[in-house]
Amino acid sequence: MSIEIANESGVDVDTDAVLAVARHALDEMGVNPLAELSVLLVDIDYMTELNHRWMGGDGPTDVLAFPMDEGSVDHGPGESSSAGGEPALLGDIVLCPEVAAKQAATAGHSSADELHLLTVHGVLHLLGYDHAEPEEEREMFELQARLLASWRSTRSA
Image (cartoon, rainbow, N blue to C red; front, side, top):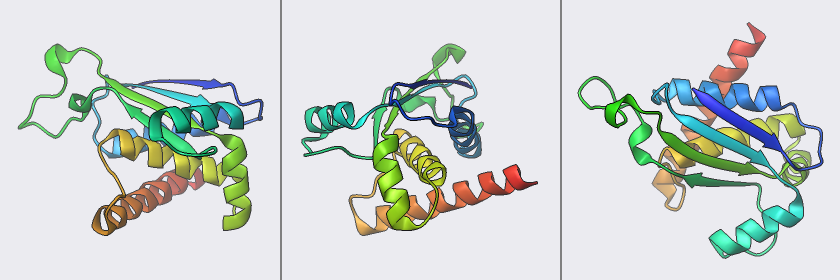
């Protein structure tokens, strides 16, 4: 699994932990091991611009996900994964540590915990999960909580 990370946010972030939680989520979801993922950490100004340009939103958001190739998920032996075994571009996750820090303070946990949650959230969006409808939201957020719990248990073991 190839995961590239670039921190252009100006905020000190444990990028190794962000990579680890992304890799854990992808592994647990059975994503093709040849998949490629990009994670970009940006400042508030750039996140505001991206949110406006791509989502029509006002102000910064915490995470954006830009899927590239929906065929990269390995659904098991009955279905082929990516064509010809070539690496599949899963997509890009864009995180804003400054927004994450504000949300973490409100939620009562660390900025690192919030970034880990947002990373898993972004991975799930890249895999086709959404939370527009109540049932979708329940499914996505339960899966997100399970993935975070299993990742945390591997780190404390």
